[in-house]
Length: 599
Ligand SMILES: Nc1ncnc2c1ncn2[C@@H]1O[C@H](COP(=O)(O)OP(=O)(O)OP(=O)(O)O)[C@@H](O)[C@H]1O
Image (cartoon, rainbow, N blue to C red):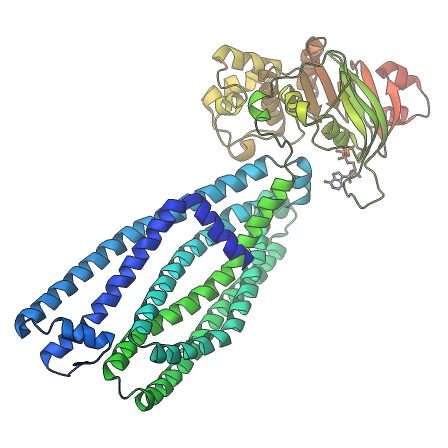
């Protein structure tokens, strides 16, 4: 119920005026329908089939008497004329209402899409570590589509509800007693249908879970298709997929079964109740034949709408979990907002490190309830415009330290300072604007090389693009491509080799003209010749920007001004390359020896 109320509130907030126009349209359509029914009384009276309400002191009598002074044939023509006008009016408003419904649905959907997407984009890194990316995609696609259908159903429900209320109003106006009698039966039916609504909601929750598994499954499998093929794991995946599809099929059949069973019971119960109603009505309300006939007419038309309302409620309940999951996502991402003042994005500027960045007594763990720290007691200084290398065995905490320095992870204890100022919401974006980060697994779009580079600087000239490509030793290979800069590189750059991808991302990082360049295993896929060229290029950058490099291949960091050695989340050595190499029985010495042996 909370979610439905939320939906109504949101609809009211974002489509306010149109929603009320729509409501007025619904009321008019229902009124026209009711008046159309009323016209039956004088019509029947004029045909002489039945004498209705002659002299009766009732609404039916009043209506019948209204046309008495008019001669029969003209009266019939007038009534039929009014009837046609009412039908035309009704059709006109129905046509307007369909357009308004679409406007309400689409504008609300756009609002929901944009709000959720923005909340996700502005959430902190911890939010992305906690949530599966495919669950987020699922909410933004499948669940959102279901919410869209739910809005459409809700509007239909609203129309049916308003229609029902107005028709009941007419019926009460004719005879409160008979209407009360009918409504009693209606409430009995509604009471027994509660359990179906609950069941539908549970099945809807299952649909959301299954759809999440479906999307995450196929995304993982398609991304890992090379591993699957080379390790002949196709059958295991086909069998997993078969089981999931079977469960999805069963779930949908279960939902349809529930719906038809409830409709079946509803129809059986309603026909029995209708018979009971007619029997008792004849006994009880013999003296009011006109009222009885009109009310039977009204309810005969309303009854299928009741069934529609009931079915609408069930379908909406089965879709509620989608709205729930979308709202959860919105709330989670909102409460994980990285920067609360959105204006920071516009006015962030670029932070220039003048002297140094420091970590003081920093501790960090991924699970806040765990006693295992990924980083412990970190005290380091990253001097401005120098090259700092971070080395250590796998899992030592190198990437975690970089994430702390970039403000992606927040220390559990201790602090990060930039030139003596605490790294906080106030200077975080300015710091990030100054950073170019190159990960081991570079991110490229399915677009041309030019578009991939221009992403960081839309106004970059041809000359600047080639200069950046030369820096990263990519100019030669791009030059050899038949379409050069205009070559499409496929999904995540799949049409390029790993080394070519890394060089392109490095070119992009340089094009951004950063004051801090962070390379996380960014040259790991390069051959020794290209790596040497990049080392030389980095040498030239020394003194112009702050460079932080993570590298397993220690030859890469030979010219670093400072090397930080991490082991099990702690800094175990700090110093120049040659100085550390001389410290026998140390972690750095051990790493160096291992590499020499391998080489
Ligand atoms: N998202 C995460 N959730 C939980 N634990 C994590 C997460 N990411 C890393 N860890 C853990 O934190 C520790 C440090 O990981 P980190 O990735 O920083 O190591 P690393 O030195 O960069 O390793 P590698 O050289 O293999 O990339 C590891 O024990 C790792 O298992």
